[in-house]
Length: 348
Ligand SMILES: [Zn+2]
Image (cartoon, rainbow, N blue to C red; front, top):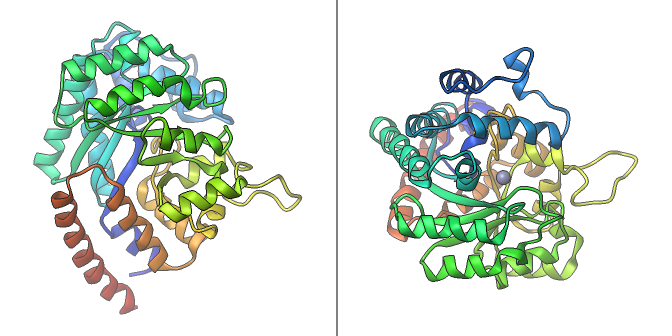
């Protein structure tokens, strides 16, 4: 077994995966037709081709708007887990979704969440892969809309919904905008994370940790530009959920100033600085990647050794929002399987 096959085969945890960025292209086309949502003009295959973040977000908005009923959400959650399990041996996945994007289309929170839960439970029954959900604030929307989302989460508690997140364009709407909503989520027993410091300054990370109560950070590539923030997150080993492909595509200059030699992947700069990096897909189908490919990219572009790649995988498991007892079961399984696969790797 070669290193690529080994890295694809080892068991994995995914913590940064947007379920609407993980929809198979064929599924989007079929669901849009079923719901009579007109597809963009031209070849439907071009829906997942873009040259910049704006193009990506336009396609992502289309995917969100195509989803209308419980069966649609069930299908995308199930297929996302099936894909993760089959192509990368994902055993546990936390999936972001933006309830208010769908609520704006007239789809009730319960329709969305119950559909996703149906898909998660079916995938667990069939493949043994576990899924959890992180409703995420679209930061371009108002505080009142975010509060409405939190009210819906609390009024319709589901075991699979374990925390909240925040995403979309960072610069116009910094994290402190939603501090009160995050604090209320904390009082309601929800875990917290946030997409931050990919476009905005590293100081946003401190806001997320200290005011919003986050225990991990999504992206955060600009952390290496601020020595004090960097020192703190290294000292405390705050987990960062990074994604190699999306970092390179959308934030190549996040970690360092532009140089004539070209950008280094910001995740490498973080790893070299001692940050607790974990590796994820962000939007796998829309970015034409999967978790196995992200591990291989991390190995080749950032760390260059198998042990450091393992370390990122086990850090992701440590950072998962599962009970400690569930994590320790998975940890044991992961280590046994890594040892077994490792003997095949060493036998080469
Ligand atoms: Zn993301």
